[in-house]
Image 1 (tube, rainbow, N blue to C red):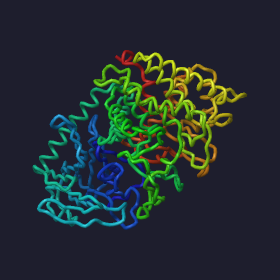
Image 2 (spheres, rainbow, N blue to C red; image 1 turned 45 degrees about the vertical axis):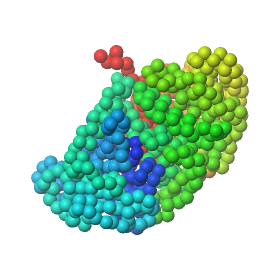
Image 3 (cartoon, helix red, strand yellow; image 1 turned 90 degrees about the horizontal axis):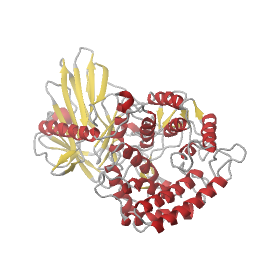
Image 4 (cartoon, rainbow, N blue to C red; image 1 turned 30 degrees about the horizontal axis):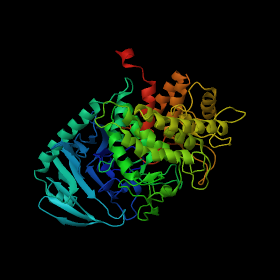
Length: 595
């Protein structure tokens, strides 16, 4: 029997409605239903206290090795289990996503196909969902070719051509032909599991191949960028357009810390980063879908919160899931996130930044107009009103408030982009209005956010500390990369916050002590900044080192332990993958240089 999951060497499958994380043994260890923020019916990743359950695995007799890979340019994962006698079982996992009847079909469904590739593999299937965040084993009922699990508020049906006793009673059997398990709602399949699985796999591969085909990828590091882009796409909830920060809750930022948070929600700042990264690759539909979410969310709200639920929930009350012991037993496991209560002023600028391309990209069928601009102006008004006021900052300090430089600059960026948009639309009076505000904000920031002696930017107004978000000031257009104040900032962060290729958000103690792990997107920001100030070869070398930190399937979590290279934090982390894409785009040689 294989050992339980002990690391983040996980793969992800998904379709915009549901997702699942699959470990290196082909075991589904995390999946929330009926949507990203739902009950994790497969939750063994977070150690259910009730016993050996919360997963779906395939146990091969005398297994000795495993290999796995994604099918090229897709979200279809293939795992091969090898036995000592030469028998081989191949597992193909995916969530159906394809065009059907003029729309994209993305049901609440996971499909698993088992194929014997060599020898006479003898296997057992262990399908053991839990309900209530690991609280109880669901009641089961049976049909002629399916098992029904009565979850909390939902019935999950497993339809299969595996003989029912083998599936329901976990009896061992000889896998002598392909077999299939389709997990989904309590609905009858209109065709055999074999035909549905085969046709859905083919159609899903076609969808992903077409999606990837139209990406404008860099000439170098293509596989890394494609994998990151597909994963970002999987983190957008199709029902509303919301983009979650990660698929998990409570993977700790470091061993035995209480920095365990629920990331299954939409941070407007994080989502703006995702949208802008995908825009650079030409995947602008994600922006359009996210703006639909944003405009629905912002209707009638003068001020925005930093985070919302994927179904527009405004309150995400934090509580603990006591029946889950946590990743490697390192609780607590949290449901909800109290960041919704915080004041984070950069959110207002982030909203405008996410929408700016809508007004300039001629490829879009429905480009931005005066009405869309008017919907953005309240975010600019809030940015102007709040840019020099204390907030929790993008690092979400829970115990203190300051005027954070990044928040102020992002507010400036929102007003500056509104001026650009107004000029594009021929709204000269509004352009002058927003440009005047942006100029006034910039003058104040430059007066109060530069160290008077060291000459670099500082983390808070009139302060003397550093945080890695200052690396973004050139990217946001606030200063030129050649500005001596920015160059000094990059050099100071390299000295003060970097540990080899790993860059910390900050190193001053916060509400929970001193950070122990680097924040992966900060390391990519540093790579970007080095390239921007002319240290390109150094940046390329650091980028290659960071790429080597990805797990076996090319994915990243939120944090890395510098001493060991081990991944920590929620997974897969959109921030980290955004950083990878942006750095690759900046550093890659051109296609003309290669061809």
